[in-house]
Length: 538
Image (cartoon, rainbow, N blue to C red; front, side):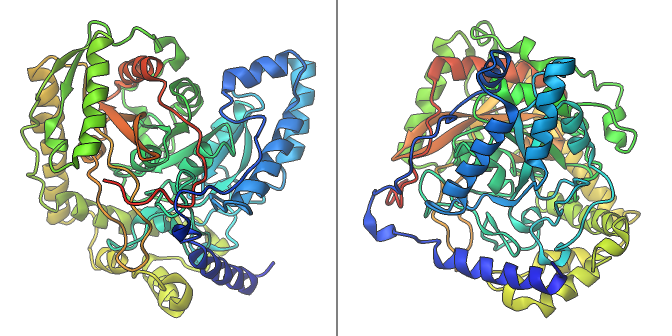
């Protein structure tokens, strides 16, 4: 397939997805009828038990997922979460079946189908495009570190997921879940609702049971927000715990990949495979980076007992009453599970950042993307951010049909990272988010973690006005480079709400313990019903 074919397919896909994006909204709460799926809500540990008992092969499981993707993602509800399937997935599955019989199990991910966000490089027959037609046809010259880790662990990379194009950094009036190459990903709980971004496809695919687990990436909210909107667990690790090499960049100071799963246990298992030191990413070489061999050892159903959790009330402001009641009920559950709640806890630097974070991202995006595109060689038609902007203008009918690229243009206007304005903004972000922000709040009250709503219920997808802010809490942990985990906490009219736990750098073991204990006490997760619409909600 040549480049012209890719562009024609992208234009058709975007038009088709937009035309169906409001499918059946006048039909009230009717659902799209889908058949039951044998592997709905199956966990990694359950799959391994079936493999070990000889009741399931990896090849059969992969075939089942591929069939379900055709039924749910490509037709039926048309969730449209997967941008490309791995043509080698069945061959990899057969090979792993043989290896399991002849040599035994590599580890807990042996034979487990995993989806990767389409900004994570794989050196195979799949493209890596960040959802952009400008990179259509581009094949990475080597695996990203994340992909290599998964292959070494025996996982089956099932395909790539759609995303908010360029990880939602093209426009500040964008519609999350849309890319020029992939079209619109829809929320499996209510098809007229948004998935949030930018790890939209990863969240929707996990929620819809189209894979066992998936990998997303986050700069600020891009794992936490879609995970919350789609009723799953999302973990944004400490920057440096998971390598970024081979991942299309936005911000060197904030970017990270992380697990997206239906359970905290599955997220912990996936994190164990992803976390490792990598000479290609200096952030992973920090002496503070002590990587456990197994994150599941921290999972304790009574893990909230005796802990001190601060309620970050500044993130609760201006929330609709119905949403607030659900989150308040979740806080009561934390107390009844044995946590001591310090309520409220004020983060001293709250509201003092101005536009410093955005300025840092603009500088780092231009520098990082230009460096990244230079590594593609002849594989990509654009070699710089400037050429990418020109490509989008030349293909405005497809790439710019719903929103622009004003963020790209502002980034292109920035100078090198040696400029004083960049260093001043970076210093401000680090100081306000760490020493004068999270660290001060955590240390002052001797807290294990802070807790806040992950966001509101999913808003309706709107190509005219773009996304609606529903009140997230991801920014402090994102700017600081600290870990954050969201867990399903309740339901508002059929739409999920998430609760976030965030804390100090390298505190993933503590956050996993807290999140697991909360999850086991509440058992909130529900599989989606693929409703046409849930109507108006707070």
